[in-house]
Image (cartoon, rainbow, N blue to C red):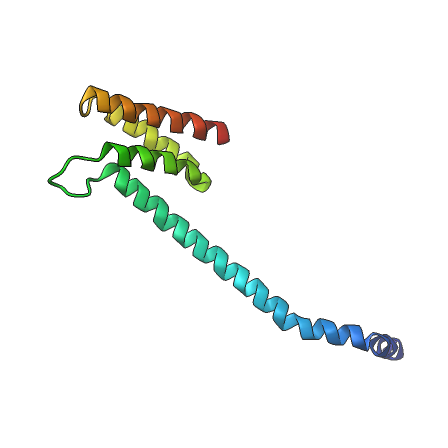
Length: 125
């Protein structure tokens, strides 16, 4: 049996050498991919939470919310597929909370974007 293994090893020495030489490179590529995924996940988390903060908090406490910024944030939330379930709950809750908030003409624009985002996200869930 040992002779058979030895014979196989000697017959395939070149291929084994290539495989053994490639293992550190393969490991480095795997590590790189894992690190990049973790970094992308962290950035996605921070970006999503920053958008939510921009949606519901004033930039300056002494100034009103910026309607167009809120509309843009709501639109951008459609890009965070991983967060769709919670985004739907947040948008539906805000729709209720904001039903009578602010001037009617501005409120209508905001509610329209909320409705469009809810509809779009529900199609993708």
